[in-house]
Amino acid sequence: MFLGIGLGSTNKLGLPGEKDLANVIDAVEYIAELRQAKDLARLPVGRRVVVIGGGMTAVDAAVQSKRLGAEVVTIVYRRGVEQMKASAFERELAQTNGVVIRPWAQPIAIEGHGETASGVLFERTRERTASWSARAAPSASRPTWVFTAIGQKADGATLGGIA
Ligand SMILES: Cc1cc2nc3c(=O)[nH]c(=O)nc-3n(C[C@H](O)[C@H](O)[C@H](O)COP(=O)(O)OP(=O)(O)OC[C@H]3O[C@@H](n4cnc5c(N)ncnc54)[C@H](O)[C@@H]3O)c2cc1C
Image 1 (cartoon, rainbow, N blue to C red):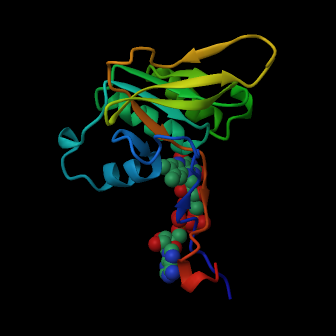
Image 2 (cartoon, rainbow, N blue to C red):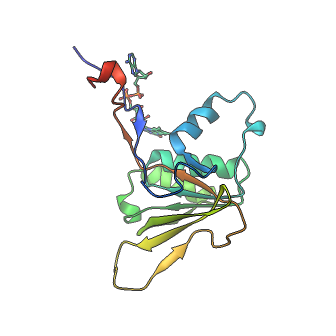
Image 3 (cartoon, protein in one colour):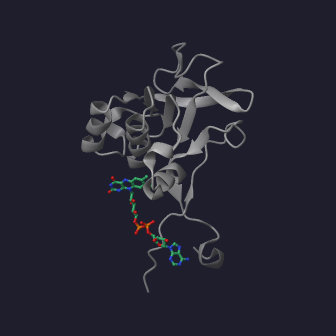
């Protein structure tokens, strides 16, 4: 017998604000909503978008956000561009759609303004001794959409908990 039930759950960052802030969004859920939307014009999208991850889902969320009207879209990946799981074609697609790819950085805090995410604080994953940090969205008063696209995993509840 073969089971082909996919990976129904997603990895979480485990950072404060990930669950509570309104515009911190699981990229897989957003893409699922987008694919089923009857009218894409009605689908909300942030003006400033940060996507955390480096796979197909990250690129999908970034490119679709740009096409839906986001002004600034940045993919931040913890390793190098060459190590991204997204294919070279997808990476090029991101860049030709105006998405900025920032490698070698990982999130350490999601900043909030009220109930809304206003930025993500990253630390550099290479040359850690250098005092380098970057805010993908530095203004605390401007909402920022944060997509998490850091991998899928088996849904523990699938098939009554056996998968
Ligand atoms: C946003 C996004 C973009 C992607 N882009 C690309 C891309 O450009 N190129 C690429 O190669 N890959 C891409 N991928 C990855 C690709 O979608 C997956 O690798 C692929 O779908 C995995 O196939 P699968 O058959 O293992 O699982 P799935 O495609 O997830 O299929 C599993 C199926 O099993 C069903 N199922 C689950 N539980 C049960 C149950 N208990 N009983 C019966 N049925 C059940 C589900 O409903 C589903 O239909 C992308 C993934 C995502 C999320």
